[in-house]
Image 1 (spheres, one colour):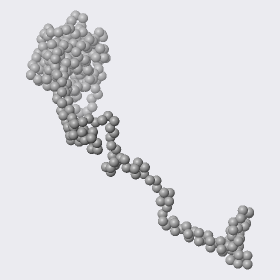
Image 2: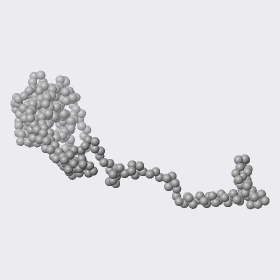
Image 3: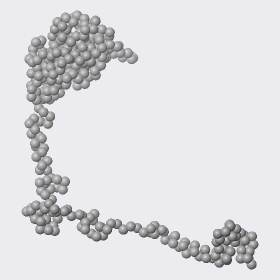
Image 4: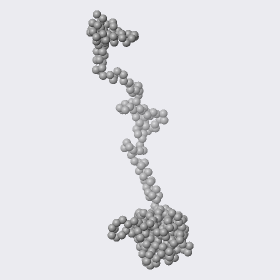
Length: 350
C-alpha cells in the first residue's frame, strides 16, 4: 500500500468515457488468465498435465467466472500510463466488451465483477495458467466494480487505482485483476474480448508530474556550469589558455596574457626526444643499412680458403684441368677420371 485505501463505487469518478478498443493516455501491455481447475494437488505425488483452455472460453478472451460463490477464472490486464510520477490523476476508465461467441457468457446479467489491484510487479501472460501461479491481489487496497450496459459493454472507473500508479514513489504495479465479487453466491461466466481482438479500451486524463532528471532543467544547468568550470586534463582551468613557447615578442605577449596569437603563427614541431623539429639530421630521415651488414664475420674467413683450394686444384690438375666448352669428357671431369684410375701420374699425363 502507498497510503491509498479505496473501494471505488459504481458511477464515481470524472472524465471522459472509454470505448472498447480505444486508448488515450495509456496503452495495454498484456493480458492473461488463470483457471482453478489447473491446480496442483496438495500431495504433489507426481506430474499432473495442465488442462487446455475450456471450449466455452474463446481464443484470445479473458474470462471471469464463479462457481457456487468460489472464484473459478480470473483475468489480469497490465497498462502503461503516459502520466509521469506525481501527476494529478483526473480520471481513468476501462472499457471491455463481452465476447459474442456462443456459450462464452453464462448468467452475465447477474454477474458482479471487480477490478482489484495486483501487488506483484511481474506475471506471465498465459491462458488457463496454473492456479498457483496467479499474482497476488489486494482488493482492499484499491478496487473498482464494473458496470454493464445492455449491449454487453463493461466500464470500470479506475481513477483511484490509477492515482496510486502515478504516485511519487512509483512502486505500485500498473496492473489489475478482474475477479468475481467474493460475496456473490451466483454462478456465472463473463468472457471479455482481450488484447488479441483489440477490444480493450482505456482512457486516462492526468496533468503535471515530474520530468525525468528533475523539472525545469535545473539539474541540467548545474551540470553544465560544473563542466564549464572544471579543470582540463592538464589540471588547469578550462578558461585559461595554454602558454605559448617563447621566441618572439608576440609569443611573449601571449604568454603574459597581453596579446593575441597571430593568425599566421605556426606551431613548433617537437621531436620525440624533446628537441626542435628543425634538426637537419631528423629532416634527412633515417639512414639505410648496408647490404653487407647482415653477413656474419665467420663467412668472410671462408672466402680466402675457397680461393686457396681452387688454386691448389688448378696446379694439381695442370692444363687438363682447365674448363672446356666441348664434350663432358674433357676438362676437370676427365682429369678426375684419370686420377681415380691411375693416380697423379695418370692425371698429369706422365
